[in-house]
Length: 404
Image (cartoon, rainbow, N blue to C red; front, side, top):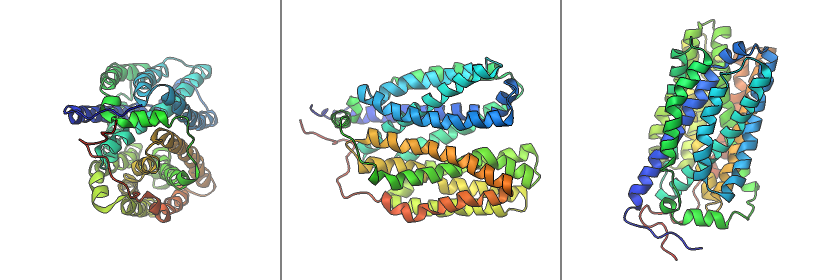
């Protein structure tokens, strides 16, 4: 199978494909934020006990992990572009169906579908992002995650503005915009014309299995980073309201501050990687993230607690995207499989993070509980050496591969 020849139009097509993928990341950030910020509303609408809700939410990341692994098989038979085009509109539609019912039996299949589709979507998005980064020959991953963070802020603001609306009204109104946007962006996702030989090489490598051992340090880093992320999304408001006696309105600013620094850091983070290297950025980021959790754990006032979670976002912003980029560097000919396997530990982090912090907080306090993810984030520092780029020629934007 021959490689696609570069053309004069290819750089423009690559820029268009990159923009479309940025839109896809933004839409996914908004969709996910709409769901997680309205969990209290779902609990009331479906009359769920705290125990039932905990079990259901714990099952969602497990199913997302299954969806991530299944996406690898789907990509082998089709392409990341085809999977993403199909899955993203379906995921948004699933969000709408969550606002329809009132009984547990109606909610369970909706959240199961949401988990499976989220896993497939996350994996296929990251596959395309890593492929585009290889094609550009420079770090662009953080820009995609900046778009995801911006989408999360937009979704949270929409959920806040529509807090008094029925869930079906809120989710339906958002879907009227999100689904057409997803369909429009899908028309410009990168394919063989934009990625050149990357698609053919991935197809040729589909039958080969990649070893787990080189990926394990990256898997650990991703899990630790997402444990910290899950700590903010699940427990920051509880920490501020119960430990520091803040109002609900003030407590919501902790997650907003975290998302804001994620966005800012990911907007400029590619420049950090290009200047200092991935190893230095990941090592420094882990140290700053641990400092943020320590500040939050020791904070005597709500505003210092918010400051701690905001600092955590500064540190965590670059770590997660660089895991996928490093996996792509390890297995440039099998990046689809590498990204799908790494993406599994996204959900491992969420699955471990929520019950870990909750269990420690139940036995002591939320302040003590924050020290657990802090120690795990510190473990990223000695693992940062695995992010060093191998000695190889980068792919140039205009001269990717000209061999027949």
